[in-house]
Length: 103
Image 1 (cartoon, rainbow, N blue to C red):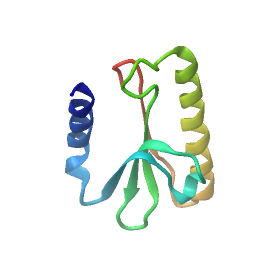
Image 2 (tube, rainbow, N blue to C red):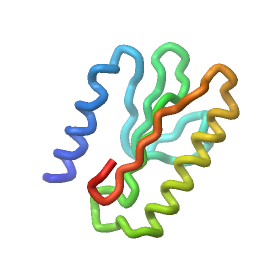
Image 3 (tube, helix red, strand yellow):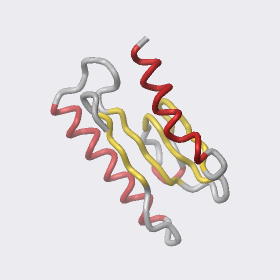
């Protein structure tokens, strides 16, 4: 039940932006980041561009050790860098990392 409550809370954080971005949940990919899967992606409604990446490092289970945090942090920033290099008209992507009950 706690897992569902956390997802529900995160969903509410983005409701005010639903007219400009759509949120994709749970192991999703985007053309800008090849085949790497992320937990949450924000996709722009106008140009289908990647505007937000949220990674739940370790998920909501007890898989939240330092190694998992390091791996997910590296995955997050390397893929955002790649995406920014591909898009000349995009100068920022919102990134967030959830780990050990903190964003």
